[in-house]
Image (cartoon, rainbow, N blue to C red):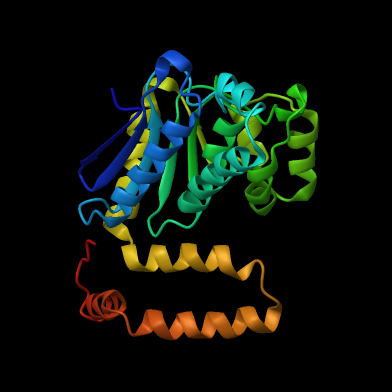
Length: 257
């Protein structure tokens, strides 16, 4: 049985964690399938927006601790390979050329919380718990902190990463980790509604370019960031999507992307 399912419906690419008996814990094999699924979704012209979701009651419980225990007896090279694998997954989601929405129907803990963190938008149920609990088992939330600090800032990140506390969906929304909290029976519909707005109203090229710039400019000095912005401005103006959008606006035509 596949650890990750991929399907497309109504221009939404669905990537579904399918290891519910292990609370969708992140084994090396599951991470590999996620990487492959995101590569497939990025190349799939039928999918304009990606939704990351999970089967079962838990979104993702984090690293497979049984696997981590085995890795403690492996070589440094083996541990490095495993860490690089998770880094590659988080980086792929964060830099994807398509918008990624996490549909969190249950707890997202440790690496599972990291998985939600690197998505562009997070929709969650109120009963879902979020937290980076690595410090409670002598581990460190090393890879995810790079993305979390970018997302919610240093002070809020310190509280979550150093305390290891679990917080509710609403508390996660208040610190900026979650975008929207909905009732469980409304989650799928709310995600679909939001995804459809992006699909119908926005240029996929423009969203991809904007997402790329958001990731890039944060590490640049002001002058370099502005020079880069000018280049991207020119690139956007000369794109087919921009020509199409301006033409429709001037002609007062309804435009559905």
